[in-house]
Length: 464
Image 1: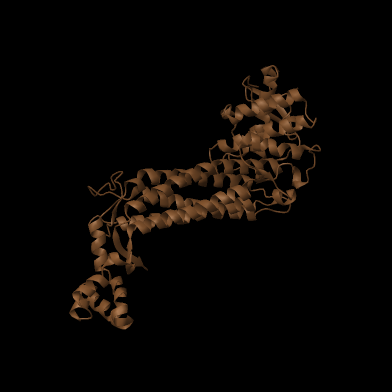
Image 2: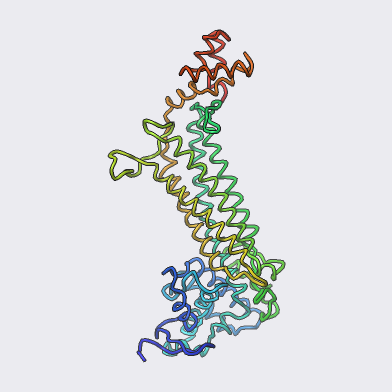
């Protein structure tokens, strides 16, 4: 037996664990069994689990269920982990056994070992748990059934603040462009065909409002749904194994430790068996991605060219766009954001499938839900920040081109309706298109009104 390892025993037998590791047998087994992505647990999940353990230790001590010195050591170890210390001790792949038990036990084992160290236990005895046990003490009154979903909700809610902040910055950037472009008249387009005039400013204000509404739905879902936690439900939501008064004590402590305005679920059995709230949050993120993708599609279309497309706006040039065509510059930032939106939309489907896969008294696909939601949040956060900083802030308009399109638009025939009616207006529009002329020119040829009346009636700026 190599001196680099120690032997631990669990219900399945002996396990070889690196001698200096803070983690123990269950983590070692999980590392061997789940070699899937090559990734470790997301730091947000580890931090959230540490928050739960800190609050639980304080709560159990306050009701007399846990010795104060053990609770204090667990709390101090939890605070270290929450700050990002001992990060190398958390090894379990995000794709693992259902319910998140391997990652949960990884945290329990590390905190137990570190708590013992803080209590003065000889590091040579690491893994023996003579003072602090991962299950009996760190996990007192808890189960993976309620702890891991609680940690997921804490992590998702905490990360959501960054997403909301980036969305706010992007909304402000779009609204600022709305003000900057307020006087630029352009052709409207419906069904990708000419429509009545509009201003570029109104379009950008609309983009800001689209995102604002989606952003508010996301925030409301985080506050009203994600912050509803099942902690105290233990196994199956029954509360079995938790000391009297534990749940009432732990909820305010968790809010204090995490800074997340959590509140307890009214029905713990429902909260443990169903992750519909997290599915709803995935749906709210998809709503953001849908609005964002639509905006980016428009930006790409309005900027296409620069010589043979609409070219009504110019996007900042951030990098060369072709390995073979010299001088080509692509709308790279908005293309990237479109890809992110596709990924976020896919996450919503995955989360919905994972929620649906819940069976009987719990949903076991929680690790997948956690990984998808946190990845989608991270991508949305960075994509929105990059779009605001690297693209929207530097958009410029080709005012002359916008004005020319507005005067050339077939949609101006709508302005003739009060003068000659719908049918005659349609005839003029069709003739103008077929002859390659403007509506104004054909209307003057047909003598439907005086030049002065046509100038007034057909001025695109009049309608915006």
